[in-house]
Structure formats: C-alpha cells, structure tokens
Image (tube, rainbow, N blue to C red; front, side, top):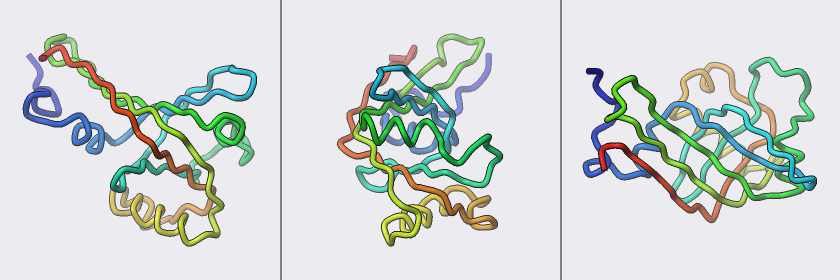
Length: 146
C-alpha cells in the first residue's frame, strides 16, 4: 500500500490539495470548439489562478492555448493523484474565465512574482512570456476516500 501525497479529503480542502500540486492540466477550446490540453505549472493568489508562458522549449511562442483563451475564455484545470492502491485516488478540477495578460504589465509582474514563490526555477530564470489569469473559479472534486 502506498501513502497518498495528501491526507484524505475530509482533512484537506479541495483548494489546499489543488494549491499544493506541482502541475495541472489546462484545458481550453477555441472558437471552433476544438479541445486543447497541456500541462502547466501554476499558483493560486486569493481567488485567482495564475500560469504563464515560460522558457521551456516550445515549437512557437504563438501558443494555441493563448489563442483559444482569447477566442473563448472558458477554461478548466485539473490536478489528480493516481496510485495502484485505488483507495487513494482523487482529482480536483477548477473551471473559470481565463484572460491573457501582456507580460510587460504590472499585473503580469506581480503574477510572475507569485509563481516564483512556488517554483524556484522562476527565481533563477524569470519568465517573460504572457501570463494567464483565471478568475470566477468553480471547484469540483472526487476522492475514493470520501
């Protein structure tokens, strides 16, 4: 039996479990409704979720996730835990309204500061790409332990 990385749902709020995760999957859809899913690092700042375009290698800086958010701001982010001991499985999904923020704004600078608090890689190599902020968060979850 493997220990779950977080206590059962009754001891940990969905928000806390989500916030402590290191990676989420960001789902967007463009104006054509075609889904797009990518892993992202993120942080929560009050009732806002923040992610950004960083220095990790990408084929292009014209990322589909950004174009999708500009065309259709509705997004979902999912964090989950899998283990062969299925009694420890859980997931938390956050739905909200995304906005792409220009990296040269004060808002983006503050957002990247928050990301750097969680990810030391961003202190060593500060991102300079667009920031995505997600507001109007709605929380959904499931846990095998509940």
